[in-house]
Image (cartoon, rainbow, N blue to C red; front, side, top):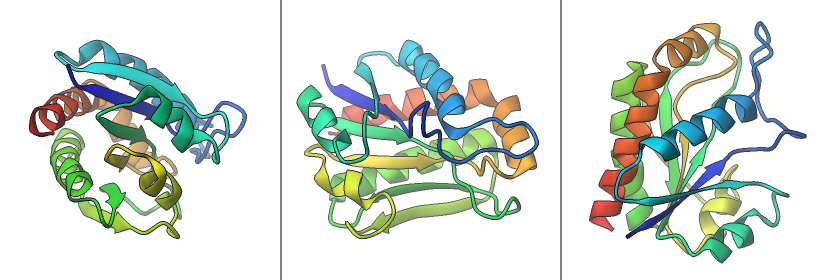
Length: 176
């Protein structure tokens, strides 16, 4: 059985981006989401992984020896940017395949504009994790949490988002 490390981006003490109107943080949104994704995946061992520190995260993930890694995040920019994107390490063909699968599923589930898949180098934001994990890794950014409309869509379509991640993880496991 394939193993998926499901990484909850950020941590309670450093919760990442937030929505000004609701106060909801990236960590809070994805913490609950990860639990529900894990419950809905069939035929793949899913292990939720929480970040102790940014520097130790790749090593913590590597200790689990996953076949692949999905890191849950939410985008933020200027409270009006919108859309879905998935990041992958620019030299990882498997990461690119994973990003394509998740991008298609997440974008269809939320119906937001597709911002596409984005290759990242080690120097780019998120590149540290993408480069230093042994297994192929993607960072999912399904919506902009600082955009009230995006957040409302993600909240309203949460069940579909869970389903998109779960089926994406199953499809990725089948091709790796």
